[in-house]
Structure formats: C-alpha cells, structure tokens
Length: 316
Image 1 (cartoon, one colour):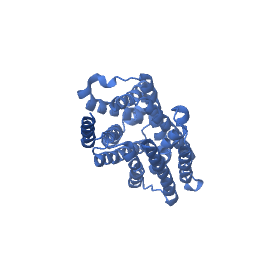
Image 2: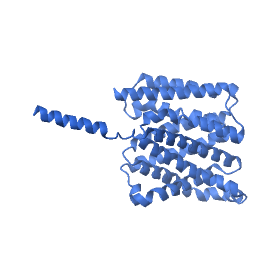
Image 3: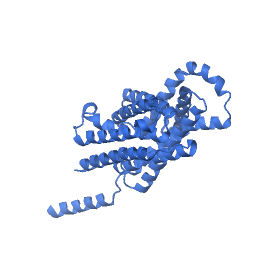
Image 4: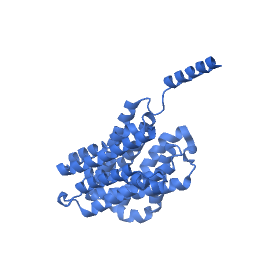
C-alpha cells in the first residue's frame, strides 16, 4: 500500500512538474502584449486629444470611440462565440461597470483637453492605489497598513506633478483626480464581474457606452453636424481610430493576462507613462520636466512595490 501510494505520489508529482501552469506558460509573450497594449491605449488618448483640439465635441468623440470599439470586438468575437458572448452571471454589475467606464472616459478626455498627456496619464495611475486603500470597506478585504502607505506615497507623487510651479491647468488637474477616483471604482466593479468571461465583460463595456451615447445622439448631432461636415479625410481617420485603439488596447490586455500572471505584468503596465510622454512630445512638443518625472517615479515605485507586497502575501 505504501509503495503503491509512493508510486502514485511520484506520478502526481511528475504530472505537476510537466503540466504547463496557466498564466506562466509564455511570459515573454505576455509582457510583449501588455507593452503593445500600453502603446495602443496611449494612441487612443493621443488621437482623442488631437481630434478634440481640431474641434470635435467630447460627446461626439466618445460616441465614435464606443461604437467603433463595439463593432470591432463583436466582429472578432461573435464568429466563434455567437450571441452567447452577451450572457453574463451578473448583468446588474456589468451595467454598473459599463456606466462607470463611460463616466471615466468622459472625465479623462476632459482631463486631456487641459493637461499634457504624460501628466494626465500619471495622475490616472493613482487609481489602483485608491482601489487598494478602500478595499477593506467596499470589497470586505483585510485592512493592510501597506496599502494605505502606498496610496499616501502615490498621492505624494501626484502632488509633485501638480505642484503650483508646474503650471498645470487647475480644471484639468481636478478632472484628473476625479478620473482616478472613477477608475478606482471601475477596478472595484471589475472585481465584481470577474465571474464572467473577459470577452463578455469587454463586449458589455462597449455596449453600455454605445447604447447610452446613441440615446443621447439626437441631442449631440444638431450642434456636431455642421462641424463634422468640414472635416477632411485625415480628421475622420483619427476620429475613427479612437475606437480601433481602444478595442486593440483592451484585447491585447486580455491576451497578455492569458499568457502571464498579473503580478509579473504589473511593473510593465506603468510603461504607458513612457508611451504617453513619447506621443505627447512627438505631437505637441510637451515633455514633463525633472520634478514631474520625479512625481511619476514616485507613483510608479509605489504601485510596483505594493504589487510585489500583495503578490508575496498571497504566496505566503
């Protein structure tokens, strides 16, 4: 009996060693995809900021961004999954998440109207720290001093970026902080819909924004149509590309987390600040000064450190 058990244990151990572990089978590919996702999402932000600067209204921009996003995702997902991709276990939570995402999109594009892209993106990275800080109350998770310290340090980094001498627009700064809070709420809502397939959540995200903005379209179009008639081909290309970049960014993120665990990818998510700074410099000649980069470094270090602490805590 003991020998048989030992053989069985040996076979099980061998199976564990040879079976590929989900999420860590292709880490290099996962990291590459999350870096590409960062560039795609920065492309969304840059194209939205540029087309608003050309005169397209915020609501018209968001309608195009959501509708194109939804159509592209459905074209990619529905051939293999059919209408079943819409089925979810928590429709109320999906509606809430989609609504919060729409509000966060409106708020962030407003931020981009007033602030350089790099600074706006850096402030937005306060969101996961806020989410961790309030998790004990909204997610019933254990209270941890490390989370509150990380959130405080991250907020210090934001204060360095938005210091009075930086010359940032106060309206843009206020909307940037509001966006970070909304993104934190979106992360919390994402936890609540984690029981659903990621592609289902992605479709619902696009569907909620598309339906709400389409309902509002009769109020948007009368003011928007005269200006839209003056747009040239390049303007339309950039406007439509917002939906492409948004869909591409989220699809690349989903694929990245299929090939590598979140703890491994977390540090590379912050590379979006680099892509945002690069595009801001190439398109508008805006580049953060030394103190702003210090603030960015403080936010990134805080987020990466608490991510590592959380990961080690789960392993223990």
